[in-house]
Amino acid sequence: MAMNIYNIYVRRLALLLPLVCAASCIYPFEPEVPEGEKCVVIEGNIFVGAYTEVNLSYMMPLNTPESEMKSETPVGRAWVEAEDGTVYRPEKDVVASSFVIDTRKAPAQGRYRLCVEDTQNSRHYFSEWAEVNPEAFVDSLSYVYNDLDMTLCISAHSDEGRYFRWSYQEDYKFHADHPRDYIFDYAEGLEVKLEPTDYSTYWCWRSNSSREVGLVATADLRDNRIVAHKFLTFSRSSLRLQTRYRMIIYMSCISADAYRYLDNLKTNSNFNGDLFTPLPSDVQGNIHCEEDPDARVIGYVDVCQVKKAVFYLGADAYRLFIARGELSPSFIPALVWDYGEEGQNPLDLRYFWDQGYAPMFEGADPDGNLGVLWNFKRCTDCRLDGGVLESPEDWEDR
Image (cartoon, rainbow, N blue to C red; front, side, top):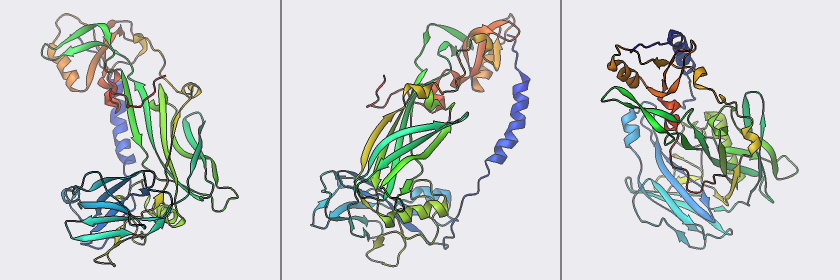
């Protein structure tokens, strides 16, 4: 079987690899942690009227082996106390490092604190008593764009709160470049034509959660309102814009102290949205150890009312998608063409399959020769672009 491999792709790849490696050299902020010091990290806010989620971990010294960092996790119990004596616990009383506490019926009045028992080290941690922050409301999600990028913007307000925090989850539906007209029989080393075309790996969904804390303060403004605040930018050719996009936003007001704590983390340590990131040594939270008041504990627990808002991008947004277009097989660049000539060597096809290629459909190369186009497997399998074949349970496909 004659194979025509376009060497220009190989040459370009050889030139690009050193540049990619060089561009990946990122030097993040690394705080000075005294040798041997291991700090407990307690992550989570108390959400009245919703579920409270709490996670425990350690912040390790810089010289800690990776295997130890992965294996060591504090375990224990966690619960929420109200000042009137009411206690809110997880549904199951188990020793763990992650907890979901049902505080849906907790009233928006009074003060609360988070309590954690480290059963490994016989220590107890308590956040300071805090009042419930005012409600915040999401007004709209909008976007602006240029020739290359799209930026999402959020607008929100509060009757009393001056400090806003939000997180989000994005879900989107997309598809592979082409459905499958062929599959590959590896045992026989042969392409097998499908009738009809196979769409089983063509449609996918993908979900992402925010990795950066959304923070805005209106303390210096006349109104408790944020208008068209830019918070997420992505390429106009992103798969997000290919078919359908949904964003779920969780908005709340936080206290001034919580805002300063989080803003300090973002400013000084390039904070990426969770409390496992290396932290500067001067950042202190509001959680204390009962047995050792001088022990350093990483985390800040606030008491909030969270509001959920769901947005779908309108049809006009998808007209901005920079698509490859409905290309005919004759014009799609193939890395490998199988012309099906006499004297074929079936091991050649197995080799290309092992290298990450797969047969797609029949077409013509730039010289007009007919054959079967082989290209990257991701071209017909959307899962290789990070997707899953099952849609979210509450997905609206309209």
